[in-house]
Length: 543
Image 1 (cartoon, one colour):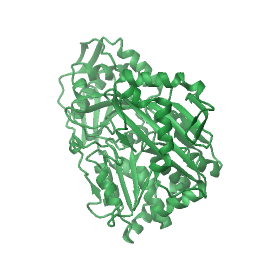
Image 2 (cartoon, helix red, strand yellow):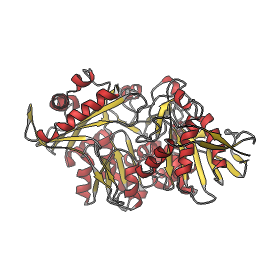
Image 3 (cartoon, rainbow, N blue to C red):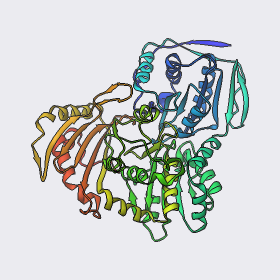
Image 4 (cartoon, rainbow, N blue to C red):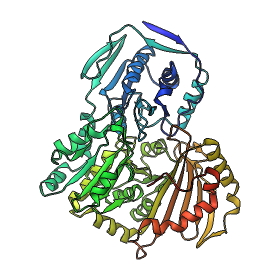
């Protein structure tokens, strides 16, 4: 029986870069999650008899929302729901399932790299039929609906779904299929990469350590790395998904994956160290004795992608988010293919991928992927690295130094100032934007500003415009500073400051990053007045 539940709007249900993210206690309010999900269903384009995919990263509150979302889907006319066993589906796996089974869309329940638990974070994101995040026109329509919603629909009375048992059940007239969350994705990876070459390299001593951070990629990494590729048991660390990620922060960076970093800098380091985040779409790559920044990883993967079967025919283009370093642009130039600069958010890559204008995409925030799905994909990046290591026989350090010798090196870092009072963060950006016109020609230490702007983007496929995507300050020497407020947090505002210095081939390629960026750090403070506006004398996280 379909029940109509009266409701009233909540303030602040505007999806950010990757959906709606708030504290668990916010989502636990009566009608809160239901209002947002119903708004998605009211807006989403879907033909009669549509399939909906539902899954998440296993964090606290996932199961409760999945159960409710499935009953609401039945009330809203969906014919079938596919849900991962245990409620588990990594974000890239969910994208693949949407595409493989012809679903009209999917609900991904995750707050990505943010911490989990009763007092921590939760999120809901809607992906469309191409498997990618809903574009801005859809998220704006969802938000508009949240502001006027007065009812939500649910089927009541049927038995609860057994999320832990693979099989088929029924809610009203809708079929619910609990599927193996790993198998389809693992099969796809085996199609893309030379598993035979990697298995042979493992038999010959190729070693690695993968930190799943007690998040969603544990089962995926165990199946692929240990069972299919033959790495020894124990290669996957922290492989059991936990509702609170073991009390840790599932963000694969040098702060939260410090144990892995220390291992990779020790004499006992394996050839490759890698990690992924809460929902499996980000990655960390560390070779023995060398950390590879996400920006460099994108460039190095693009330069060597032809070594994997899926990319042997070459790339159609490379796309990067605006704050990501320009290292990938230099690879694209050498390969004679387009380089696209987009706003932050994987949805901006979707139109390029669908149009066949790009093959590999990446963001400095540890997200890399290709046209195999419409999401960034942590394990995909790790497997491409393994494929390259297996075919070339070269260690990560040698691959990196040879890359820099050919293309030059982009010294790069991101400074995050987290949980800033939103009003103070906005005041900083307003003051910064008002000063842009007067910056060109000014010098800050040895750096002279050549141009400064607020980044705007016109999609080359659909013509849609995105403005106010971050402030860029470019210097005559080729260095850059980017200032941007992030849309992925759940409290206050996060100011991200991106620092980039380019050294040409033959230049200073083997220096320490902090020393090479010191002049840019000083210039960023002089230009934006971060300490004055926020009271912060140093960033909370440096990556």
